[in-house]
Length: 333
Image: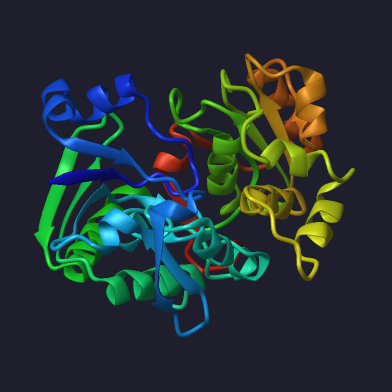
């Protein structure tokens, strides 16, 4: 038995993280491998999708006699839902497979958003990759804010994921009738608000129900900074405004790791003024990320009320992307 950690393009787990996640007994007695999307010797080609995306997969996964995926299911800000086929791609895929799944056309598609699978080109592509490469069995769970399991499913991969997403939708997505002038959000605290890159998810949750020209106030600790690893910060620094970032990212031939996170952030900023309260980022770092720094959330809310008027509507998302609001009429991203 080999246990693969489906990291996608993220860094591998440390020994301490593996012990916390799997238990020390498992770490001591099983072969555990962090997937590396950037190591060609770790990958094998398993054909192409109908859209022409090359399917580079972890060699251990591709050559296994039996493939079992495990994961937790929650709304995802561009793949619809986490878990399921995402464990294979991008989880165990090579960089040359992951990039086309996250290109500007995919990320910019109106159905590439929270809770949507049908017609979502990203979900369609990763589902196709999962089915082409074969998953023999799947175990999926949903969890609550205390990280306790609220439902569990096992069996046929597609059926299991569909069942889990139905439950997750009822528990984690909330319809509202009208958009709000101001939305206050978080990224659900540590470790989910470890850095600004991750906090974009909380901003995206707020963007689902903010009025055009409205205000998003995001509180995120960002103890890991912007961060410095990856290319998110580098891309943010490559232009002077969100509109310029989008023009650059959507240009033919542009291909950078982490561009998807910058694209989503920039799309949000074309809709609303995004303000950030962070304990660890300086005002200079926040402004360099094209955001407005605030020192006090309450004062920022009072300022937003003055801007939008005393009758303005305010939404508060204390758990950020753990609960996703959406407009009943389907308008808005």
